[in-house]
Length: 313
Image 1 (cartoon, rainbow, N blue to C red):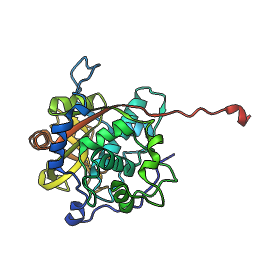
Image 2 (spheres, helix red, strand yellow):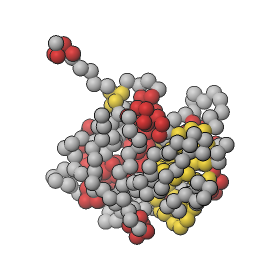
Image 3 (cartoon, one colour):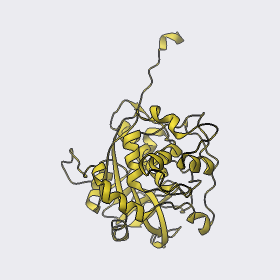
Image 4 (tube, rainbow, N blue to C red):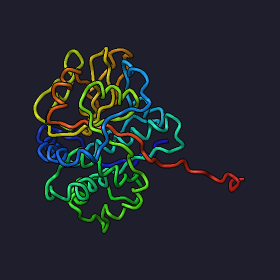
């Protein structure tokens, strides 16, 4: 049975609506990494004993753990950085549960992640306008944790996102009211990666990635089944899979089911909605310079609840 709280957010219908959802600030990102690179660890896999697999994806693991495809709730505002980072945390939960951790899956509340990154790490430097950058949001998740979705939280909508991102309250509540609760569930390690080899190693080891850049893509696939670079999106998304022999990287967008049907070249199965298939050479050319690719690992998750079955007898 689904545990997911459903949000009433519509996907973008045209280029103008898509543009307002792009909230990555490249110049601020570059200043951040010049000063704060030491807030993140160098990429290193201590248990890497062999080459990564030829092909890997994270969505099969999410489906196995949760019984559902990855969330396709569209962004309601320019909170792409926190939305994709929260989805990376959800994938990381599934990775650890899949590998045997005694934890339960929980959806992550994106407005909290947005508020922490913008206010506590970025010092509210973008107050009054949407946006963030990946390093700051990742640092916030490492220092202040993440918040699970519960029924008493404000709706995930434009008003909540922008209020928490500007350190304002919604229904009398601030993101600061949840810091103690979220602080129990931190991301242990965040690392910036700068090569396709590290991308393959990370996803191949079931560690999710985010990518923030100014590269846009066609909304649908071409005749060969790839989404081609097109236009400019100052935007962060997730990296959820790759195939070396197939020549592709799988990018998950947070705009809902807007990128058409993608059929796997090898298995002939449909990918979950919301994904794009991008050529490896296009990704490598456009997503390592003037961009930030971040890997996430070691999550302090949500312990399995223990029930006293004697009360039922």
